[in-house]
Amino acid sequence: MKLIEAIIQPSRLEAVKEALSEVEVVRLTVCDVQGFGRQKGRTEIYRGHEYTVNLLRKVKLEIAVNDDFVEPTIQAIIRGGRSGEEGQIGDGKIFVLPLEDCVRIRTGERGPEAI
Image 1 (cartoon, rainbow, N blue to C red):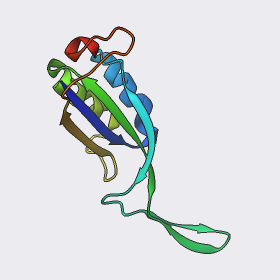
Image 2 (cartoon, helix red, strand yellow; image 1 turned 135 degrees about the vertical axis):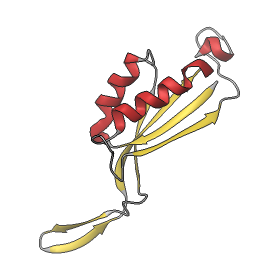
Image 3 (cartoon, rainbow, N blue to C red; image 1 turned 45 degrees about the vertical axis):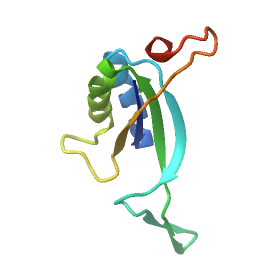
Image 4 (cartoon, helix red, strand yellow; image 1 turned 45 degrees about the horizontal axis):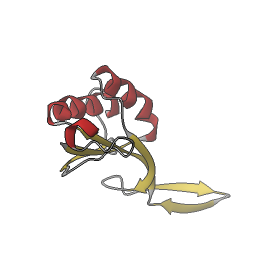
């Protein structure tokens, strides 16, 4: 079992959800987050004053999958999250973490069956 965490552009969320459903990944958690990487924020003008916004709004997906679904899930996130053919700086990152255990609260099932 793996926990896949993906940080993507908010505007790409619907496309990623659609791509995930095509590979039969239908369970995920979505969180609004802020951060920056290579983008290093942006400069904006508000009421005539220039200021730097260095924390950009992003969306974080958390998806627990069985080992057979890891690569299809990653490819679906890439397909839905990439801006254009080549992608752009700020499209996001995917992290794959080992998932030691999973417990379904309702039934008490554990492990891959609980996902």
